[in-house]
Length: 336
View (cartoon, rainbow, N blue to C red):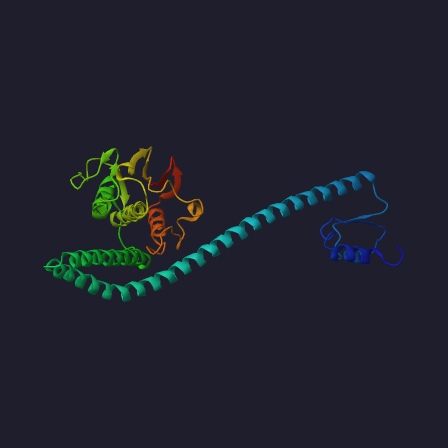
């Protein structure tokens, strides 16, 4: 060969990325054993001496082509597997970072709730005592009514702070509760009682076509599920309180308002839907990430932790929570 010999040509081919893996069959008149070994060590795939039989050459070429095609297929599979593995690793890293961030938020939340809770309790106690003093005012009904209205506004503000503390405390809390078979219907009735003093002025609540009142039997219907009762009750309270917040901003007359809770079986699953028509559905700009931390439609009422906490609790129970709009209703659907 002019300028370079076969060994140099093989070296160039093997050092070039586009030709590195292509099979090379050397046909040569070399008869020295050392030279044949050198040829094989240089990177060729096979060696055939001249003179050669055409049939033998064809067999060798076909064999090398089949091996090369198998190599290409394996390489393709390895690349796909590598891409999938890389994607899984990246998702695992993202999940870990999210867990670390939430854990950090939890530590901050624990400190904040501890620092705020003590003065808040002191303020609530003294505000209650102040209400008795206001009731005792005589001779100036105008001042008395004005003070009572101011007292109501302050008490409402303190209650909102209390809700924030309760929600942020959930982030820091380590769940050590154990699962037991409970009646899911009973947990919803209990949770509705908890918020009823607030809700009764804002909207009627219908549970499985029955209007809620404080005398509703917790075991009127049975939907048995393995659960941590207290945690699921927290989910219902978060959703119901959010509905109350929305109805506070609604311009609908009371008779036009509806808070509907539907509980039903779907084969082995229990599906619970909370539907309210406070503001004709969830805004489109937040519906896709409504369960993320710090996402909220409420001004000066919360930090947006509530639904994120609810999602974590539902997933801890092996369930799924979703949010969507249906016939001008905001719907939160929980499948357990």
